[in-house]
Image (cartoon, rainbow, N blue to C red; front, side, top):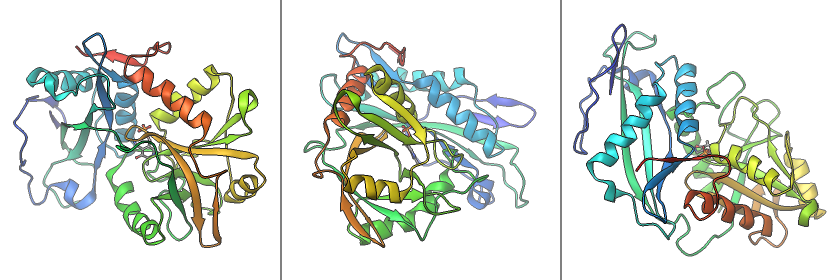
Length: 327
Ligand code: PMP
């Protein structure tokens, strides 16, 4: 779908997958107005196809657009773009029963040719899709994380709360550093004090304090520089449904280390659309490393994972009305 200032959204079409044309002066190549979303569609046990939290993703795309001075794609066009894609061939959505889904990637970028730094007057919205298998084909395995003190992902007043392409470009070097340190993922800290936990590369973080029915779940509050994850938001609700106390607050790396050592923090997990829920087993930083409990996936982590994936695959009741029937 194209956008032209003064004319609005126009020329929606479905094209065979392939290269697209862009003017060499296309403003996205120079000034980077590019935002995206990620969501999944699941085939349901009784037939039909549903997607998880479609309107939350449409709304976040509009919020990202506002931050990047881009036009907001209306929610009905967002939904229609997904419908149009499934109209072409709904067999792209994998069969029900397994871990498979269709990953949908809506994105919006500036196309106007121009070398002046200002919001572009022309944009293009595209949707591509790819079947996605199990994130952990050999079962859920805890990840190790590197606390990045040298690089920051986002600062107050910046673009961290938007799903903005440049945030990911800025994170690549730190992710490479994490790999060099033998870790799977980078954990971002706040830009000012480099002390408070923000989020992981493409996932939000949760800390479980205590165990059993008295366990409490803590997740870093939306500081303005971390992405308001839709999985994060969903798990806050599901954890409360399960009777756990949930808290959104600041959590420092010192608290993480000390309370892991004392056994007060019993589980840590990361969550996002791609991996759903991933346990964190080991934490490394310039000061040394430590493990969370015995480094294995925790009970509450795995129970929440079962609930969330059950809702997405239609085997658990969708009490929050998060599934949108597409077919
Ligand atoms: N943080 C970042 C930086 C991400 O890219 C993602 C993935 N979209 C998340 C968190 C998790 O967000 P969601 O649960 O909406 O996928």
